[in-house]
Amino acid sequence: MAFQAVFKRVEKKYLLSERQYTELRKRLEGYMTVDKYGETTICNIYYDTPEHLIVRRSMEKPIYKEKLRVRSYGTPKAGGTLFVEIKKKFKGVVYKRRESMKLEQYGDFNKGLSINAKDKQIENELLYFMKFYKGIGPAMYLSYDRIAMFGNEDPALRVTFDRNITFREEDLHLESGSYGRKVLPEGTRIMEIKITNAMPLWLSHMLDELEIFPASFSKYGSCYELVEKERMNSCKRQEKETKNIEKKEKVTNCA
Image (cartoon, rainbow, N blue to C red; front, side, top):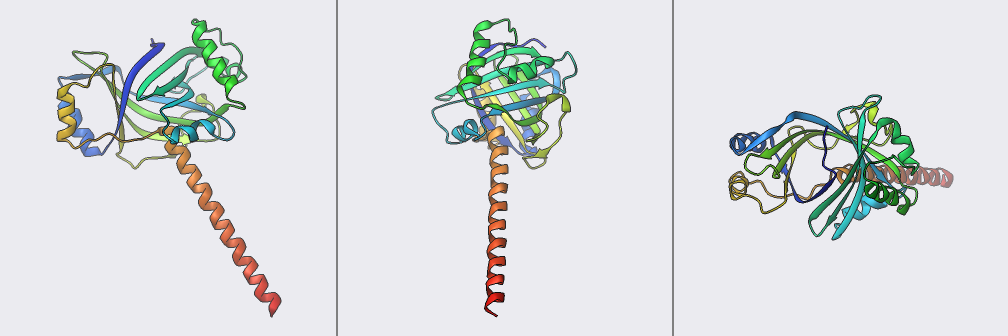
């Protein structure tokens, strides 16, 4: 699959119900076209420190944030191609630096070794990222099914629809396939509008008419937040159980 190594664009996210998605797809006919890949399962490994510093900083919504991930389109097999990328966001503008590597190079990349990239500048940035964040490594597997569309008049205009977001914190290998837990209700889709210039008026009108509004949503952040909430609830339950046991023992001793 051909890919673009460097991106600079604005990306806006929206949460769509099944009804909004169905109606919007109808209205986009004539304006946008689904790319030749149709619906594709995109698989990712997100990287973080043992303290989850990267995702926690991102959730604070700073003016600058960055993340590192390795991606495949579908489940890769021996000799398959992976894409490793740094995604940075500064004042609402997204910048990506991306390189490819073979599945067999995944282990070397995790060790901070060279992947013999064609673009040495991008590879140096990737390796620097790995050195800058102490203890960084694979932290979460996350996949979703995506339909991507491009503008008929402006191919740089991209709209993507993601569903079936699946994640896990173990077995962090892309070749293991998509399985794990879900993070969104059935029928909910994440739409991203990716533009290099201003949003077309016709698209803006469609969103207004269907009452589709921007939403702050991070796939990795939402999955991490769900896991952390469950961990905290588990700790509270254990603490409560411990106190109840201590209370019973105290009553027994007094008797």
